[in-house]
Image 1 (tube, rainbow, N blue to C red):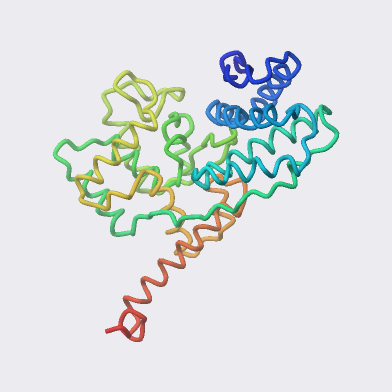
Image 2: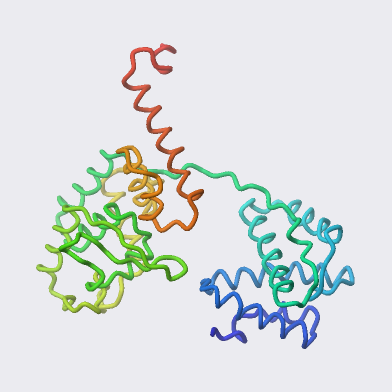
Length: 318
């Protein structure tokens, strides 16, 4: 259990100053924690409820009971009219729906009218990806750097080879790697384990890094990528490392650590990989999340067509 006293915003508790309502909030925090949500996610849910509870207080409604749909709609209109980002609107509505669903599930309310509230669809931006030439440029930049760092080579090659999230890469231990099977065991979101594949190039660079490292990282329980104190290299540190090499190589500044993951998926799709296999390798719980890469791949395909075909759109304009 998390420390609910520290997690619940005092402002939320003070809206009603009601022992029963605050007890329900405590139970809700425990419920969210049981779903393996991160502390940041739980904190966001609770801060979003401040606006909901304040609305209930102002309109003589109890947040621990069923709130009618017609009473929720003015709140929805208010949230949308504040001009905040669409992603913030979606999160706030999701927080309200989550809390109301909790009340119904544990018999605090008989009905959940919030389930009728529609969440506006979030416009999906196509992720920025590396071209295959840009990937090669990035890797060659590291290899030719005057202060060549075998750790950085192995790190970046592994992220691109496996499609790991940066946070996942930072937690990899020596014992998570099976060199014989070319596999890595990854602990992803929601503490779900999955197996990802290592390329031959990635295996070679990891082995080279291990053999040449001056640190004691050969024990199975030790972090693979370490900071100067021997602990896990943090996600923020990994981001700084990749940004450094992007700057040195002169590549697009909009590319990022997450671009390596996007590129992994897109290049697999371009090569004919099944979308379900890509979903499994990325650790997506829903195939809908993975489908965005089909749009990226289509865009890539059009660019190739425009460059190669004599009757392409770009050539007809000239």
